[in-house]
Image (tube, rainbow, N blue to C red; front, side, top):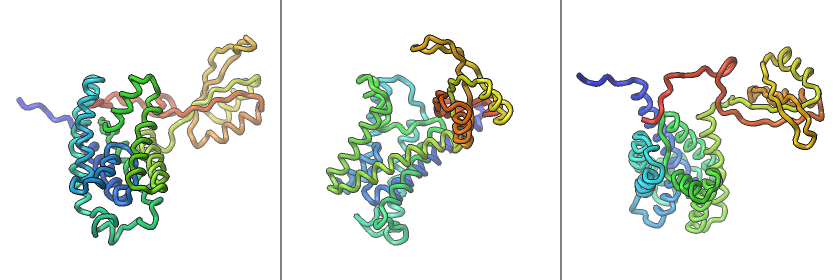
Length: 306
C-alpha cells in the first residue's frame, strides 16, 4: 500500500525551491556582475571565479557547501535536514543556469544584463536590490524548513569552540570574505557596497520571517503605575502584566509592568509613558513572534525540517 503524500510537506519543498531561485537571482542579476561580495560561500565563489573564470560562481559555492555540511553533521549531529541538503545541491545549478541565461555583466561578456539591465554606473542600487533578493530568498528557504548552510556552519563552529556569540562569529566570517574580495578586486569602494548588501539582506530575512509588523516588548518601572495601568487598559485597549521586582540599590520592592505592543504603536506609547512619568524606566525589546489573545494564533500543524 503506497504512502499518502502530505500536501503540506510537498508545499514546503516547493517553497524551498522558490527561495533558492529568488536567492540565486539576487546573485546572478545584481551582485555577481558588479563584483559586489555579499558574504557567504557564493560571495567567496564570486572572488574565486574572477581568478578561475572557467569555473562558475555556483560551482565554487557547491564545492564549499558540501564539505561544510559534512563538517556540520560531524560537529552538530543530524540537525541539518534533507531540505537543507536539497537547497545546497540545487542552488549552484540554478545560479549557474541563471548566469548563462542573463550573462555575466560588463566585466566579462555581452548579455541580457549588459544590454537591458545594467547597473555598472549605479552599484549602490545593485547592492540594495541584490541584498533584498538574497535576503528574501534565504528567508523563504528558512520558511520552507531548510537553512542556507554555507558560512553559517563556519560561524556556528567558531561560536561553539571559541565561546563567542553566533552573531559575532558571523560578522567575523562575512567580513573576512569581504576583505578577500577587496584584496582581489583592488577597489576600496567595493567593501562599502558589499556591507550595504549584507545589511539589506539581513533586514530582508527578518522581514520574510517576522513580517513588517512584529511586536515590541516593554518593561516599565514607574512610581505612577496606576496612571500607566489606566492608559494601557482604557486608552491603548491592551492588557499588561505586573512582575514583582526589587531594586538592587534601594532594595525596594516594586511592580514592573510587562506590555506587548505593535511596532506601529511603539512611538506613541513611549511618548505617553514619558508624559505620565518622565522619570520612568522603560526597556524596549523586539518580539519576533507573539502568540495568544490579540496576536498570532498557535499553529499546531507547523512542520519542522524534513
